[in-house]
Image (cartoon, rainbow, N blue to C red; front, top):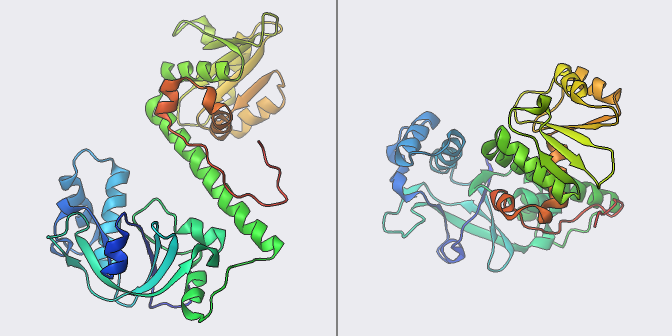
Length: 335
């Protein structure tokens, strides 16, 4: 960032009128009350948040309390604000024009600050990477990676649509697409880890194999020499024997050797984990072509490919919507 004194903050809202007509930026969490009554440190905010919203996960508490603390204490008058409005699809740039205040008469957005809007620019005035950064899932956040781009937009009198060179455009778009894909993979694996432990993950992998066109037979739980699933492409050999592990730690070579020992002549092996493989385990897989190992990211990719053929209960567990994202022009598009 070009200036030490001013930070750039991003914010989202469902109430464009409040922000644009009343010259206010605001966030909710009305039950937290007046934030200025909470001691000026993050731990105090976490304690208050956990008391106010019992049952929230540790991560939810940290995220929520962090946003509230930053809005109340870290934001300074004169800091820059970037706000993408939904009603007119503009990027609104301004500066914070007042101290924090608690507006108890507000219906929802009670944590407020005054703002002075300086520019309202079309989304085409910014790179894909900048737009992706301010599309954060957080209600209130720090803009870091593309801060200079927003400062340029504020200081330049004339802002034109960004037409980067082919190389610059491809680099930005590719990075944005990779971030989106990686975030989706992380989400899938978190949901699997949270909802499917032990035998339940075996059931899911069997369903995924069926979506891929295999006949999948679950073995009796706890039996069949460590073989969890038997899969066949058709009535003829080969048979694929599958072992599934839902553990968080990386898979060791000994575990793969146990699968190999359970295979009959002519079998192929498939090992599926939500985590990864140790170096020795990966070396074992590289030297044993009859056994294929699927790690967490590879599993997530398979789920994305065959998602629409999964059973409805699993699609409800991992709700995804098919969307199109920009990719670099020289990349291969998988349709």
